[in-house]
Length: 416
Length: 156
Image 1 (cartoon, rainbow over the protein chains, first blue to last red):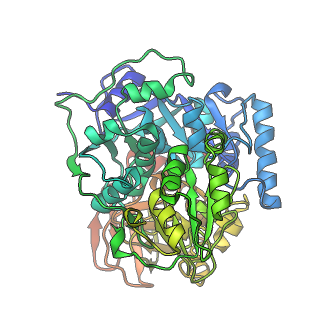
Image 2: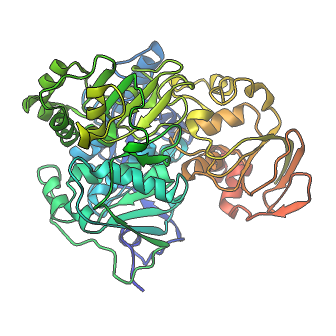
Image 3: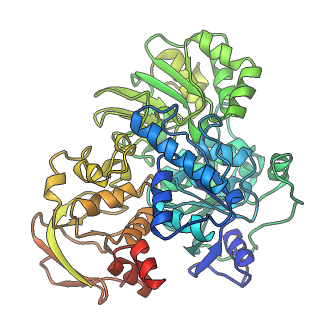
């Protein structure tokens, strides 16, 4: 019997044949902490008798959720973490580098065959490099900081095979929203989702990150794409590694196999208040919007802004909506800036903020009042997620967000 | 390990934002989390949680990895959470802080006594004992110790 990628990664790390369902103590290659869950993880590390972290070079620290400090409490958390970094010799990216998941990817902290954990649920994004990456809580992170290892129940895999070519202005976000609607908010709980097929092979890293990022929205422990030339090209200059093959065997045992054809896929919009409530954009077209957010770890990359700018053309954003654009990292910001897109967005009427999570978590700025409606390229539309519990959040692609920003209401990007 | 409490009935897909909203994550004061637990779901719920067993629908605790959600429930006095399925990060967090979580699909009557035995693997919502998969020995030991931190201290 063959093995899935996930089983191969755990077998490689543990030095024995590991299969789905096994509970193993596996070493961790990288551990990420940020300003929301980090302080509690550090507290747990000390409570467990921690003195020195297992390896300061393998710990990634940065602040992204509440930056620049939006309150005295947030500022105190930042100080607490800075002290820990200094004491332990951990490199701290602090507030300037961007959203944690984007920074982990672009600084080469995740690579094929590795196990990376993060104290944030969207850690599953690093599966786009062929790593096994999963979000954990603060106690587990405290344990990892101390021991550099963690107990894992090795997940079964769902094989999501995607084929076909996207229509213009339809892409990875529409695909993952449609998969979430199909699998459901808990359809992949405890499982890994392995994305494969021609469409995935043709997706750039940005698109693969969008897909893997949202695996958690189906309850998955991880999302993963087998590494190929696109992966290894992305890693050049980020990580010194000799390319190798890491694939699921043809006779690997999957929990489930699902196939998708994107040929006729329409732009998707997830309606309030669950991510699996995705519908073709036509069903909600015309819905009034108050605020549009293009950004987040899901869709805050240069490729996403290029997509939005292409839809925008030389037009202006509607003065009926507030358009907030936030690149997900310093690098993505610079690429977008150098391509002239920041100027284009600002001229069109957008507010462009420095890299951060922004309105996505509803913890810092860009909050919604009762009754307000947001259209967002982020990953969650839970009740209260972006401010008031009486507000409504719709999720979509950067193309749909840009089209809707032009008209001031939810709009099919193919029709502007 | 046995326990009992009065039932509080909740629907499916209760996410961690609903358990404790992002705006309360600046503090490390767990009393504040307990005070504001479920605020966005029902602002009147928090004071009723002392001695309660939450009986919820599927996918309890989905969303963010914030351990503050599990801590808020425990700190507010929740005895256990029963749901047909849990989101995996929440499930682990709950075990790690010593909050009993029981996978069972129960018909819930508000306020009725719910009794459970984690080691023997049953739960009773007043309609007879329903068998559930018992927690593994290690998970049980962690919950009994009050969480991974106290478990680790004793073990060491």
